[in-house]
Every structure is written in structure tokens, then in C-alpha cells.
Amino acid sequence: MGKFWKEFAKGIIISNPLFVLALGFCPALAVSTSVDNAIGMSVGVLFVLLGSNLIVSAIRKAVPNIMRIPVFIVIIATFVTVVNLVFHAYVPSLYESLGIYLPLIVVNCIILGRAEAFASKNPVVSSIADALGVSIGFFLALLIISFLRESLGTGSVSLFGVNLFTLPVLGENPMTLFILPPGAFLIMALLLALFRRMGVMKSE
Amino acid sequence: MKVKTLKEVFPIIFITVVVFASVGLVTWTDSITTDKIEEQKEQQIMSMLKEMFPSMSEYTFEDDIYTIYSDGTGVGYAFLAVGKGYGGDIDILVGLEDETTIKGITIISQSETPGLGSRIAESSFASKFARLNIGDVALKEDGGQIDAITGATISSGAVVDAVRTTAMEKVKSLKERK
Image 1 (tube, rainbow over the protein chains, first blue to last red):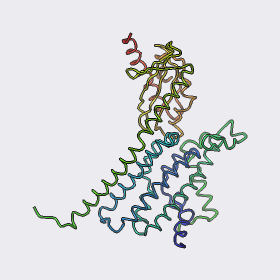
Image 2: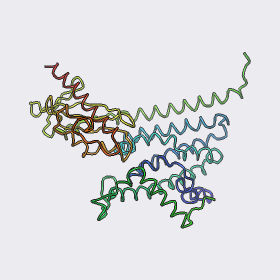
Image 3: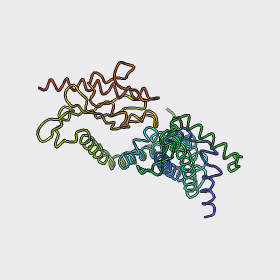
Image 4: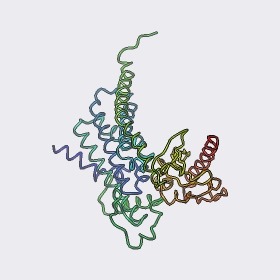
């Protein structure tokens, strides 16, 4: 079981997909406008990554090498379509706000990256641990970014319709810039700089 | 023609099997979610109509137009319009007070850029349409009455154009009906 936790833990900090590996920026920056979206996106990524890592790892010995990538893409696309339909049927509000970025999980390089670099070379149990760890790492990163963007950009943070808090001055005059794309880059850059400075995450 | 060995055709067989398995899973998910999705759309339209016409007691649906009645007297019409947005189709429910005036609009579904174009779905944008003459439904830069959302001119324009053109069409067919 020691190996399971090792694979699980590495995805969260030492090889955090966003802050260390710098993978999956496009969807992460695009949907990190609110905490709700960050949670919804992370659930989607968790399900797809878990499914694709599981299947890819289970069939890794049978997959012909030249058909590797097409097979992975078909598997990932299947899970993305399933997530898309399930979200549409059971959480329509989230489906609305994630919009095009939900189906676009299919081209998220975290998913294909883990399938190619990890699941296709490791047994099923380690691949599940890897999927869980990477998804949680992705979720935490997205949560930090979206929390900062939502609180600065709208002056308040709400969770599924419940207002958590409203900032005193920003509540009336929010810095809308942080909700817009440049805000995503600013927050991302500041966080990366901060983490490097603290020495929490060294890529090599 | 040279007969291929099994080893050579195996990759093709493999991907075929994978694709069939994938189609199977997607079809199965689709079959269990379709009803739920339809039901949700129906309910959504119901509650939107009710919100737009608080006095609604019943409605009829004919030629893609909802006619809204309050205790037997007609109080307005509603219909669906589809705008071509930046990220795909924008489904809009449009309410008419009478044959010239907009009652209000509601965005049913959209896939515009979150945080920018997706703001067309906020009530502050939709409320700009209330009580406008159909002919005035155009962006200010095109001589109309509606301010585009900052940073989302394409999305705003798509909604405005869809509402105006569809409203004109529907009013025409309403007049023909009489």
C-alpha cells in the first residue's frame, strides 16, 4: 500500500499538474472565474482521468504500439462524452456555466499526458492512485486560483448559490479585471512566483 | 493481393473493437440521460414562461409559438430563438406582450466564453429588452436601444439579432393566422 500513497501524494504537490508540470492551462484559466466552476471542472477531470487511466492501464499489454495514441484518444473521448451527458442531465446549471470547456476536457493534456506517461506503463492500482492524486492536485490548484479571482473580481465568494462572504470595499467596487482573462494570467504568475520563492515546488 | 498476416491487421481489429465498445458506452449513457434532459428542458421552459408571464394560467403551443392565457384571455406570446454566438448556438426564450412589443427574454442555454460572453445570461442584460419595440432591438452602434456587454460584442449582437429577426418572423405568422 506504500506505493499507492506515494503515487497518490506526488500528484498533489511535487508534480502538481498546474503549478509544477504546467499542464492543462487553457481549461484551468478559462473556468477559474468562480469557485463553483472550479469544483465542477475538477469533478469532470477526476471522472475522466480515473476512467481513462483505469482502462488504459488494464489494456496496456494488448494495445499495439502504433495504435497507442488513437486508442487513448477514443477512450478519453468516450469518458468525456459520458461526463458531458451526465452533467447535462443532473447538474444543468454547472453544465451551463462550464459551457464549451466541459467537452474540451478531451484535449486537456493532463489526461492524455497521464495515459501516455503513466497508465500505459504501470499496473491498474498505481494508475488509479496516480489519477486520484493528479485530480486532487488539479482541484487544489484550481480552487486557489478561482477563490482569488472570484473574491477580487466580484468582491464576494459564493458556493452553489450560497453567499460565503462579501469583502468590505471590493463588494461595491470589484476589480473586474480578475474575472477577465488577463486576471487569470496575473493570478497564475503571482502564485507561481510565490511558490518558487517559498521553495515548495522545485521542478527538478 | 498478398494476404496480410494477423500481426499486421491486429492494430486495425483492435481499434475497431475499442471504437465499438466506446459507441456502446456512449449510447447506453445517452439512453438513460435523454429523458432526463428533455424533461429538464420542458420544466425549464415552463418555469421561464411562468416567470415572464406571472399571471399565466394555461398556454397553447402551435407552429412553434406559445400563446399565453390568463383565465381564458390571451396575455402574450412566447417562442424560441437561436442566436449564432461565439461559442455555438444560444437558445433564447422571447416573450411578446403584443404584436409590436417585447415582454422580455430569457437565455435558455449558451456556450459563450465563461466570464465574458456568458454574461448575456445575466438578468442585467436580459432586462434591457423589456418593453422595447421589436424594431428597436439592435445594438446601439447599429442604431438600436441595447448596450453591448463590454468585451462581448459578438455574443451580445448574436442575441439581439436573433431576437429581432425571429420576433419579426413570428409576428408575421401570427398575423397570417388571424
